[in-house]
Amino acid sequence: MSGWKAWLLPIAAVIAGVQWASSRPLERRPGVIAPDEPLQVELEAGAAIDAGHDYRLTPRAQFSATVRVLARERYFIDALAPVAPVDLAVGWGRMSDSAVIDALEISQSARFYHWRADALPIPRKEVETHSANWHMVPANTGIARKLRRLRAGEVVRLGGRLVDVAGPDGGGARTSLRRDDTGAGACEIILVDSLETLAG
Image 1 (cartoon, rainbow, N blue to C red):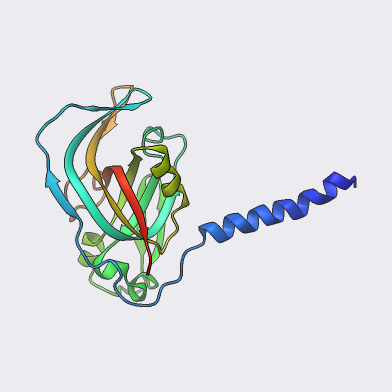
Image 2 (image 1 turned 30 degrees about the horizontal axis):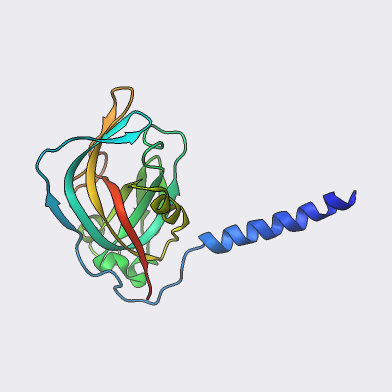
């Protein structure tokens, strides 16, 4: 094996190790770490926002929240990917408590957030109303970078607007405006204007 090829395996191993370390979930002690409900104020109809790639956003409400990240998923090729490349599964209230989350199996796929439990640690309705899958539309490249780096277990404070999306082919998606819905159409679509990771 030539000299440069001999270096490839250890270099690849180091890169893989760094990627794993930067994406593995954070360990948290039991206890509620994001106690408050998201805040929402509906907006009057206004001008649509050009999001690039022939997508337009229609703001529906001001939105802010402090939540625990339960999972993060990147999307590259679906209809929303050009404007919402990252989805976050998030929890607040008792759905930010490791004692609850550790009893659940959480995953994301096809723009949905899934959970299951052998025995529910809290009532099913509370799981449904205190966790959600959010389609994240970064307002700028800095926020896009932060979204890509988020790890399960982190607590984030974000602000922005709930938006409907109109795509270039005439299709689109409407944001949820409720926290008590489930299934198709229940995801919030958030134009993220600010994003801060909190200590603790």
